[in-house]
Amino acid sequence: MRIRLATILNPEEDSNGVMSHVFDLRRELLIAGHTVELTSIHERSSKLQRIGYALRRKVFSLWKRYPFSPIYLLILCMIAVRMGIQLRKNYKNYDLINAQDIITAAVALLVLPKSMPLLLTCHFWSAPWTEFASGGFVRDK
Image 1 (cartoon, helix red, strand yellow):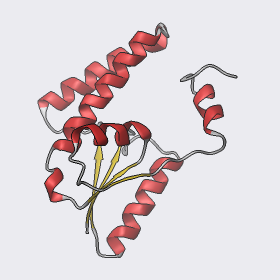
Image 2 (cartoon, one colour):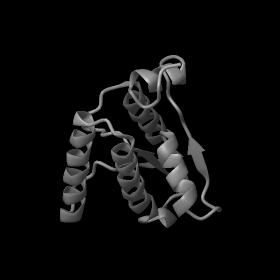
Image 3 (spheres, rainbow, N blue to C red):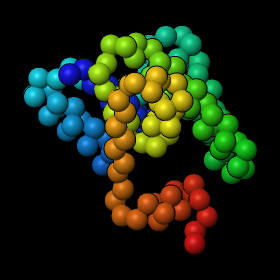
Image 4 (tube, helix red, strand yellow):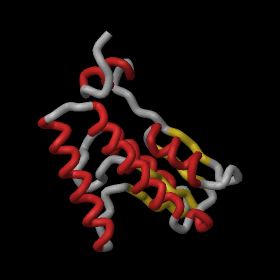
């Protein structure tokens, strides 16, 4: 089976439980004889990808200074567009897309044909609402 693991995290820089799971899953699938490719929005092999990455980082730093909801919405839209491009590219070469987060899964449902199998894997250390609140994504309580 040809499997594409997709995440919005940066496999080269993020060292958390999600990326540990992704690498473990990839290793096990490869051992089982499957073809596995890891896709991330942080790829910067082309000039356009590098420009998009730099622009996302600039907008993110702006949001860190001025935590204004429309700025964060812009960041989410930029992430969604980038992931949509990544998923749409060569999707016919895969039998399954394994989304490692809800954003990737939502984008996959929008840009891929309904015939493409999609598996969502979510990772939380504890209660999701606590993690989202402590990360500043939603208000506490």
